[in-house]
Length: 478
Image 1: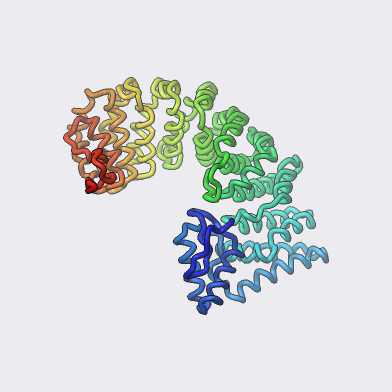
Image 2: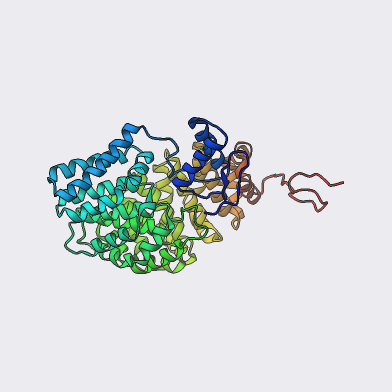
């Protein structure tokens, strides 16, 4: 990254907000501060960290504190030992022990992973996999790669991508090895848009689709779904515009039918159902996909799963999020009511009232289902949803996310159904909302929208008066 200018006080180059730097750039900045300003190692390090952080630079993948020489030496020794074992075709027992040492070191934290990466562990591990045709050794290699590249995906290169694709294509591969390769693939995609695009462009979707069938082991299916979700992330702050939407469009087009078949087949598998719901939610980026889920009988299947696992916080929370996504399509929104989701929403929120996260997701689903839909609002009103909304907001009075979602649920319920206002006010909604105005300053817009549509007395702040003053200040220039 080209620096825009150099700070005259510290010598550190100014970077763009939310940018990232390499380990070499950071080390050079520390060295420069130490030499130019005659700082000791500790002061130079602290000053460099402060300067980069003040410029919004992401230091999550940087070794900001030098490791103890003993720890660093142990990692280098293990990697070098692995190189020698490849040359001499050493015993598998020693190979596995050495691989476990590297894995244990990387599991200690990001600094240890960075040190292992600098010791060329990535290349050596790939060489080890190719050298030793043994299941245990290859299993340990993949575990070491996962430990090495968790939160350090920059190590992945063209060779690694070719390794992933070729081994996933190999129909003779052991399911355990496939599962670990998929897990490594997922870790390589997290917070790294370039890796995601290169892996996607290697036609991995065709391979993933082949795993989403009934006779695939459940653990392999789960890891396959996690890779699908990782490919549609948009979490790399180094990239202004990613391709998450395009990836989601292609993956949904290719896999939705297979995923719905799996949901029907494995309705009794709780963890797999959680993964399926997570994946479906991530893929619902277009109305056509919502309709595709409906056409495949998905609305009935999702309801059945939520009823089967009514007391499972994970299932219910993901079910609520999926309902919210499906409600983005007006036709699906109507179908949800016809299929009896009013009772599902009511009963599921009440059964999981102690979980603030699940309650938030449930209220958000209500808000989505009632947005610009007085028919849905009436159905939910008749099912006793107002009592549930207000009860949830009172029960989690200190949870900002619950209050915000509740505000929008109230607002959407009453905005085109004014006859419901009296009911909400009788239940104490006005009092709760006014309390939130004082407690949660950054949600005032949401709270005021609910109060306004309830017909409550409310003082609005005029942001601009047209008199030449700055916004929100009320001051007038002389």
